[in-house]
Length: 146
Image (cartoon, rainbow, N blue to C red; front, side, top):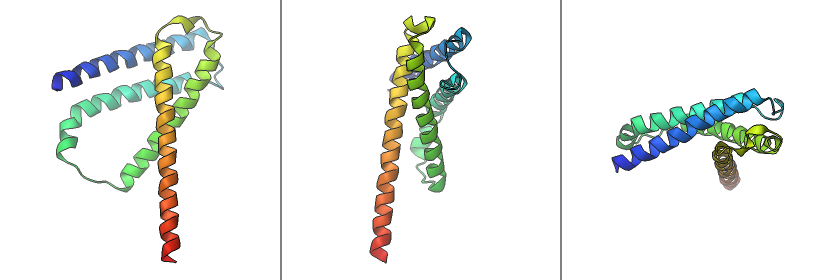
């Protein structure tokens, strides 16, 4: 199993690093309106993905051994991740609409970036639905106690 995890890690690192450099090239083309597409944030998102993936691989045995619940810290981290995913999904959508007029549109990296945007959007919707469900249950409990 360890060899498969390492293989997936190498493949994902390749994709994230090449997408990071693709975004650097996109920044140099000047094709994108900085008010619509925040390429710096998208580069930052790629670096976050690289760091998070590396930390997950490094500390996975520790997390599996020590299953502790952290409560409010987990909630705050989840909300920050939700906000980052929502902003990434919005940026990828704007990137898609602006890319039609750019010279770098024929590279494969855009498809990986679109996939990341779709995954970020799905994660955002899932997070928003989870928050809505939590609030509905919370209000139902409060209503029952009154």
